[in-house]
Length: 124
Image (cartoon, rainbow, N blue to C red; front, side):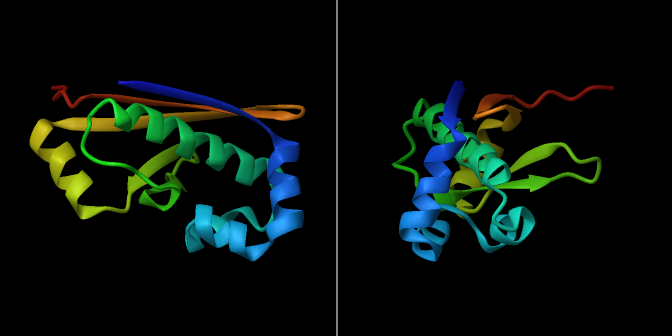
């Protein structure tokens, strides 16, 4: 399962200007808000990652998803990772041996992200 999203960073800047913390709290987790510190590029990348994740997970037909079901965290080596905030989704992924991966990139006025869900395979 694959999802991709691209967003103009100015859209996030305008949403912040217009809706402020209401927008932030509707879309982002406390961790993400603290991590990005109102940096539009950081927030845009996470927005794109959440949209891409919603698209990828929609193929599983589990249920409808919201932005806050997904949290984009930094791994120890700085690579973005997708943390699932819903226990039911986590249980489903574990039972099906599925693992999501994300990648985020920025270029001038755009942020793009991909979410790829694949079978976990044991590498020996």
